[in-house]
Image 1: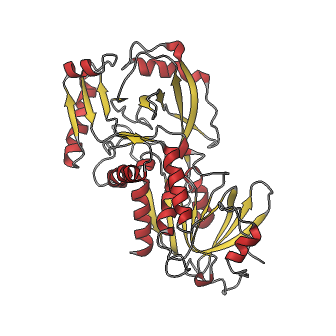
Image 2: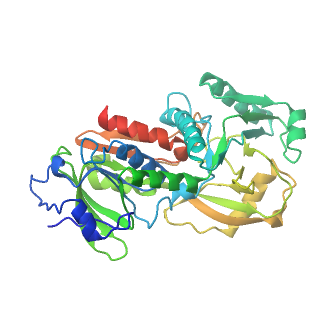
Length: 422
């Protein structure tokens, strides 16, 4: 059957794109070998991580269909970054919480440096706000000191803020036992970042297929012949097929579903979804000029309901943690507000209850109901899964890419390219 390609990012018609692919036709036989595939790279998932990977792989293109090949980004929504990537705190994390010798720590630190450099060079809105981790009890301060010692061991700058200095700088913030400052934490305009990555990917010759949901994947000769994907147009319901030499699963909330389409049942993964609610704040006081995080809570699936700033300096709070079954359940709930108020009052006691309101929600893709902080006393820690899969040549699988995924995105892209080509 003829290969029908999906709605592209660029303003050309289906017929033009088929001409771009030289009107190739394929059958279900061995002639559908990797070297004859429609694309060199197919990246499933158009969040910030998928965009970074697609941009990196498209950068191998030489513009003439040579050694670099071609790259397509397949996204189920009508635009990039409509799920986890646009529904988060937009924080550039330092890498303090994830333990030694983990992918989260390694990729967060490398990604942070790459991200600051890219934002500076490309005028992507960002700011090094720094972050305070505030402790209210001796036990919490002991945990902060463990973070401080770990940060020193991995060369991430932190410092203890004397309490008199803390009161002078942030008079509205309560920190009864101590303040640990993270000097390299910041914020980024995630939408501006993704707009740049999308545009740069396009400039490198990449194609985007929006509104396109992968419904079936076939490994041809264990991946040695590439991969055949069946893709449904979510608007029309029509299905089409395409082939790619290599395949990258960066589907975020739906990465386990993609994993289970391709791998045998013994290697299936079960997804878990941690919904986080964010709350807007309409009053001008109390205020803060830096990010404020509570001391880590053992076993929590997140870092606590913290205070973050947007690029305009507006305060918001969140996320909390609510385990849900539906990854599309993005409706803010009024009944989450009271608990959030209590959490925020621990470090910002003069907060005005009536100025807080449910704002938006995001959902983090998890591989279990595990702690967000390494070394938790009562729950295990889940690292990123980024790996080639045995018996599936040219397939790179990314699972559980939650925080610090945005910070790590450029470093993850480098890792995926290395897995494929080095």
